Image: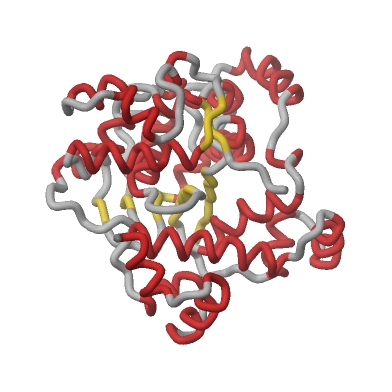
Length: 333
């Protein structure tokens, strides 16, 4: 049985102070989400990611602050990622530092997947927050984290070429324009940061060569993405690949460093198949889109790689016993 994704309680850093600034009681919000009232006290405590995501949405709604997640991200430091920061900080260049962040992120947040792609001189660092229901605030936190990581690795003078968010354009965009160095685009097909590919080969300004042997030893002692079951690695990869509409078995196998036959054989040994995992991830993303965005069936169908809105509706209805429209109305009731 698949375990519920967890995140370090460090994800709550600053939450209590921000909630109180809006006149909210953080303990009440935490208990309402099924979390301990003192959860923020121990940053390494593991908490269910779904509960934290729901609580962020609840807090934003109660505060009347569409930018709650963004403001929360501003209260975080680079060290908020705990051991992941230690592993990546002394890599010699940006590309290798980001590779460490991507590989070891489950140590901090098992529900967050980061993907790096390059095309025609443009690099895109995108992220997907897994889970049920709306995850607008959690995604805002994640994108702001990626932007902050890049600024700290590349220097405060670095500029993004663009910041992309799946969320709808908020009524007040000032906080978003202040938080990011590049133009912010809303209602996009993915969430992430675009920047020049050349930046990936620039030196890491935080690196100290003398500490590299220590971090190598630390990395050898910790589990990474390669140590996860192949089914979970494939789920995480599919969440990232879905935004690019390129979820084919041959490409997934290539990204995993396996032949397609080997991938299918190993997944079968774990009791699943590539297409079953793709179906699972599509369902997860579809429910998130229906509950957390205003996108219509045609847009969601395109995002998920279906040939038409009708094909998406038939698939969703067969899987959930009701049409996307009926399911969405039930979430809003």
